[in-house]
Amino acid sequence: LCILFEHARRWHQVDLGIPSYDMLAQMPVNTMPMLTSIKISTGSTLAFDSISPNPLMLSIQQSSCLRDFSVGFIDHLLPFVQTISQCDVLHSLGFGHIQRPLIDDGVAADDPLFMPHLRRLSMVWRGWNISPAYRTLLPNLRVTRLSTLELSVWASPLSTLRGISGPLREFLSCCSDTLTSLTLRNALMPTTELIAVLECVPNLTYLTLDSMIVT
Image (cartoon, rainbow, N blue to C red):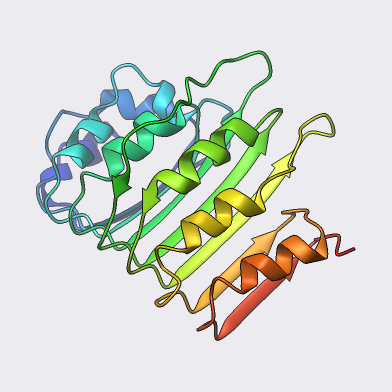
């Protein structure tokens, strides 16, 4: 990896599978001026944004050409999305959020996050109490040109998922004209709420409902 990191300034497209995210701490800072696409995966439970420092995030924050970014689970939701929203040409974003037990994620209301160039968004929500996270983030995201949305929810039995349809409808209201593909996995909701969500996206051509309890 150290040998590869020496050539990061020439990276365009990278698919990086590593044992742990902490290996990214070995990267030089601000060395990827040509990076357009990066996917990072790991089997470790360490969160992507738990690295201190995280040179890759510093480089992404200053990137002017990153179009596709996919990463595993992150701990601190809003700071991560706020950083990613500064990538002006980002077209595709995939990430997971893990809410660990007895940890305050620091999720609070904030100014809207505008991502006008985003076309595809894939989110996985996992943890013990993810309600505050999605109830805060979804209404604040402004993705006016989104065409593909994938939302997967994997919560503990003690977690509450009630009220997901309201924030989701508010989120979809910004991209109701452009969204053509919607995937919902484990986003448990009554049929009436599901219908209300689907009414927000009249131009769908692809719909996937996976592992959902429809009343």
